[in-house]
Image (cartoon, rainbow, N blue to C red):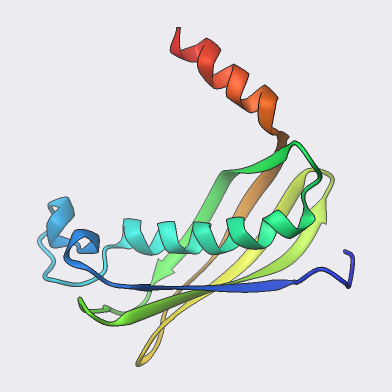
Length: 129
């Protein structure tokens, strides 16, 4: 890895009603849903990955493992911090921790694959036909 590029990126969201477990049909109350926590984790890794891409490249999420450790209520800020663990050819592995204003509430790992942006778009369009 190039030491001049960042190896960590943090992204913060404020939990809204649209991000709750109740909103997605879960029996949960007005707390951050696991799918929304995963989206925050993935977004933090995506932003970090951008520093490693060449012109015409993007990344796609390929795998995520997560543990949702504690509830985060509506109105509270939640932050995911992605740390780049390794790059193996086109594979980028990230470790991610999630904290709300009271402490750690999630953790996991995420794999993103570097791909050609144009080729990815073309494959998507071809599949839609």
